[in-house]
Amino acid sequence: MQLIDTHVHLNFETFQPDLAAVRSRWQEAGVVRLVHSCVEPSEFSSIQTLAHQFPEISFAVGLHPLDVDKWCSDTAAEIKTLASSESKVVAIGEMGMDLYKADNYAAQRIAFEAQIAIACELNLPVIIHCRDAASQVREILQKWQENTGEIPRGVMHCWGGTPEETQWFLDLGFYISFSGTVTFKSAKAIQASAAMVTSDRLLVETDCPFLSPVPKRGEKRNEPAHVLYVAEQLAHLRGETLAAIAAQTTTNACQLFGLEI
Image (cartoon, rainbow, N blue to C red; front, side, top):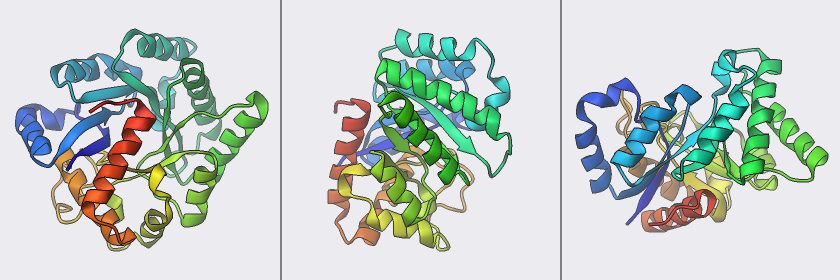
């Protein structure tokens, strides 16, 4: 059985002491590829180092919506240059909207739309962070499609929306990725969404080091090996076998990010 963790942050300091052991555990769990996300372009060098140290890691470059205070006139060109310079870059992001922790909608929108433009120009998928902003993200994507006649490929990562919101993004052609939150007892809306996503749009992730899934929820640090628990929960919610979920989500991740295994 093979799994792909489509969203990790292994460059964070918490992984520095024992990254080799963390890797051994993800290999034991059947994780054959990982997509490393990017919070801001200054991380590029550290993520690139990891991607060349571990051949199973591919990565994205972009600016997180909670870091838009770092956006300046040169940021878009920097992201485009970095993405164009490295063959292991498979996406732009993570980008998007977060109106849970911030209310600077206008600034977030500027950075979001600029990164959509880069992704479309480079024919790369987008990794979208969307928290308490489903209607706003949907509107931005719909307006983009109306104005340009195209819409980026991509994934709604660490998805936390309702089934209605989930359908919005399925209708726009997006993949939906579930993290450890789908294992939380109180996450009824997320679980309902996980049950209704079409098989060809389903992805799994950890978003490590955050959001450790049940039964590891008491551990402060999440890690890629725990994506197995996300896949197990999806199998339970959807009435499918773990093997089927692993095979389908692996196929989907390869298709979206152009990965080979």
